Amino acid sequence: MTVVDAGLGGPLLDHRDVDWSRVTRVRFALHQRLRYEYAWPIEHLRHRLMVLPRAEHGDQRVLSSALDVAGADLVARRHEDSFGNLCHEIATDRVEEAVEFEAWAVVERRPADGPTRIPAAALADPRFLEPTPLTWPDHALEGAADRLARAGRRDGDDGLALAARVNAWVYKVMRYRHDVTNVDTTAARALGLAHGVCQDYAHVMLALCRTAGLPARYVSGHLLGEGGSHAWVEVIVPSDGGAGAVAIAFDPTHGRRVGPSYLTVAVGRDYADVAPTHGTFHGAGQGRLSTVKRLGVCEVDVAPA
Image (cartoon, rainbow, N blue to C red; front, side, top):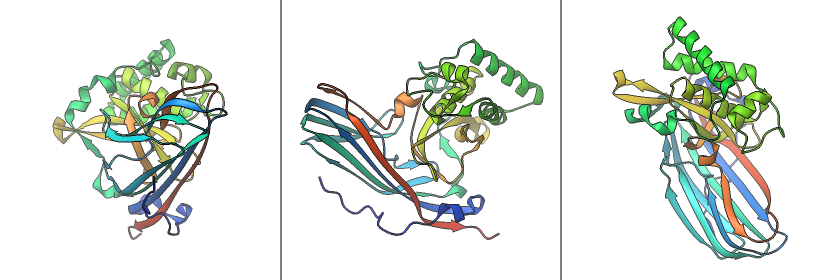
């Protein structure tokens, strides 16, 4: 398949020179390549990709996007899942040596539009309140959630203040470290290790929020300046006097609220709902995955000092 130019050919700005506290509009260019190589031919490949952002998410809008798949005769279908995420389902009968996925997108954010508004029904949605296999609380998580909630009640915290308290606690307790966890590591295990990557930080925060009665969802996406994908948490709180709800994003890996230098791709209950690439096939051995990601700033508007 061929793909039209998605507008990524121009020069990119150095995001380190931007005063992100004063950004009123930012336009991102995203380019990703994922390549699976196989030692022997494989058959009946069924693959799901979740690498391109949804059309809209809060102040974020996709201006253009494209996906190219090479290496096999295939059938590709795009659809939205139950969370509104953009999914690409790929199917092919045979791959001789390799299959490659390449995605482009131009995405604009306008932070002045405010937080992500969602229906009030999300406040009672069991998907965001109940534990999942990856976020199931053990005694340590239950104890921590109880202590944080009691401290919040003592200090008169509302839901947003309690979420900030949880976010700060996870950032303080955990230490960032590669190669000690994997995509199947639970929140309980990650907290027991007190080490992990952004996925683990997000799962620990989700477990604590949900145990404390705060609806929350997992977010996958990208952060400028980081080489791989990133993960954070959106906590859902009432708005408009309870007539609506908003999703407020926290990044426990960095101990802060999410700002305009973040790009959302998908939301779900935990990592399993939003894994960027996932699939099955018939054949000997495993596929070897290599990835390349480039996220840059095409344009930025900054408010006067």
